Image 1 (tube, rainbow, N blue to C red):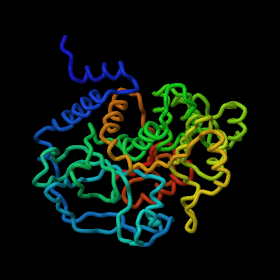
Image 2 (image 1 turned 30 degrees about the horizontal axis):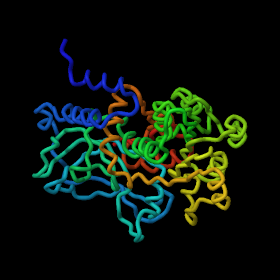
Image 3 (image 1 turned 180 degrees about the horizontal axis):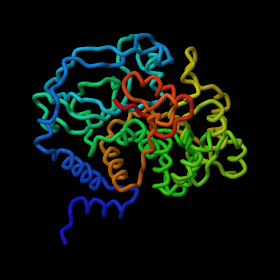
Image 4 (image 1 turned 90 degrees about the horizontal axis):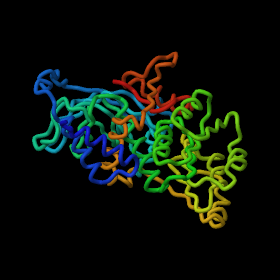
Length: 388
């Protein structure tokens, strides 16, 4: 019988469920490229003529209060340069660090007037004269500064092909790459490791849980509500700790007396300290963030590190920082891995567009401040996004 390239890819993945070969990933990436570039020739004709102006969110004052920091303005639609594509955004990803961006913490000079936002999913609206790898109407994903806008021009090398125009693919940008690359390259997780994921029901956490389970780790998930507890259990966590009901330190000391091998830490404060003191011999704690400190206007430091040297020495343990931008060379491999895992239903993306809120779903640029605040209330589950 005829075996399609897709059948072959699926079979290869099933034979190698975790440690995919470089050959497989390249073939998977080529397949996605082939699939998404095979657009109907009439799609471009169906595209409406481009507007002369567009709207974008800009930072007018530097503060962690996102609503106060930003405003929507109208500008002339940019023309893509020879090597650029113009993307019409459809879905915008919301991240905890968006308020660090509006506070100016990523800029050495305290400037204003820039567009915040780190990721978007949309479609190609126009291509530069030298761009041969994209077609008008093709769905793409993009990660980089300046995404909270209706249209944006980016270098074609930074646009990532996706099979469909769906918000789920936002999960494979900041959150998905952070989860998989961080756990592999910094956490060095392996079969049998005891892995603790903080904020396990969050945009990054729920993907980290699933990937650690794929790698056959024993996964402990930390969360803060009954609803999140249910989600994390459904994702396959071996042990769920709802810190509103249980004391994290007590659970770790009683149930994991030999410690935790890898901690995925995004919370900071007391959670960081409790995780640090419960690291196993040669344990690794990955600092991905410390969200409890983000809203502070005056302080951006993680407290409680006085005992760090002694703990690390006595346990031969280590604490690693992880900044996704330092691992950009890994993006192509993990983009293909995430797409393959999603296609094979090995990884699911939980979405939160605010549909259950009394104020309604997040739609339009004006709703971005609400979406950012929703994420920081601690009540969001999965990947928070805005539709425009």
